Image 1 (cartoon, one colour):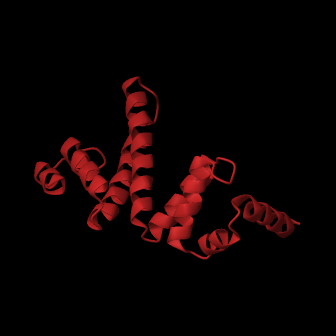
Image 2: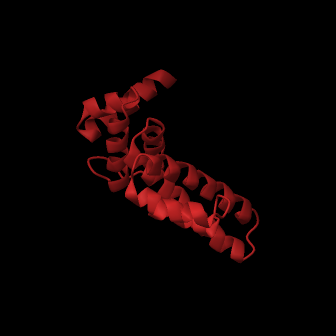
Length: 147
């Protein structure tokens, strides 16, 4: 029964996406297809908007080496970390721990995209080095990535 429901769900997704080839490629590890599917979910283009599904596919594309996906995943983690930072200022339990963890992930993905020449990722990485968020504060590395 479980496999049947998964097959039905996948069929609905294939029809909803209008591009069964993209879904098949994404499921088979094609980073570009995973990125395209993530953006479709993020924007609600040809599918119902689904931010958790978008993030799932972005992470898969990022792991597959897709530079723009790496940048988008890093931005998502940075936004989440900023929210945790604000909550920590108001004494929300566990916010400091979550803040550090999310910025750590942001640094990881900004670094991956920056090494591939993504200018936005390089600038964001420079800012994180300068502020010391998610990584040890380092003015020299901040300057290096900003140039």
